Length: 241
Ligand SMILES: [Zn+2]
Ligand SMILES: [Zn+2]
Image 1 (tube, helix red, strand yellow):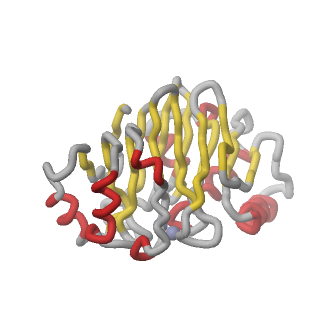
Image 2: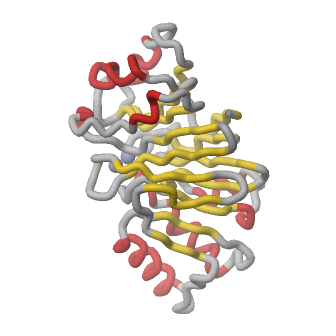
């Protein structure tokens, strides 16, 4: 699968980084993990068809992970009428608010046969001929999750946001298995607080996103210290896994 890091900033965008958003491509189908960036603008700039978008999976409802859904869903509703997507949003209130936004700004109709909003719970929430997606609870907020994506033998974990100081020990234990990628935030805890978990980590590559600016120095200092590859992707960086 191909991963494009569209937004890599911590909770606040910067001059160079949008907030959290990644696109996955598998056999021509498109999926998003979090939508804290202008998703629809990105698709158009990359010459991708909205009709190829199958699903948007969000880890939790903080706006730096979800705000791109409103514009995307609104345009799908009234303009891109051949598109159809499942939106996984972890709070029903946010789904209701998104629908309300579309109702009141349009002709009072949300085409729910194409815009399929769902509240995910722990476990496998999505499966098609390309990928399987599992939600794993975390302790960042009331309903927050890490997302494990499987494509054939390949597995990538997107940690979402985690607990402050990792005090709730909510890094999913799947990182102790030889997964292909681990996308980890670095805003709510320090590298020292993370390092006991890294000692046990068997992922082949770690991608650090959502990092406080000062932590990029810590990431660079990790060079050669671990058996896995450490990557701090910029916005628009692409990786084939
Ligand atoms: Zn965040
Ligand atoms: Zn958050």
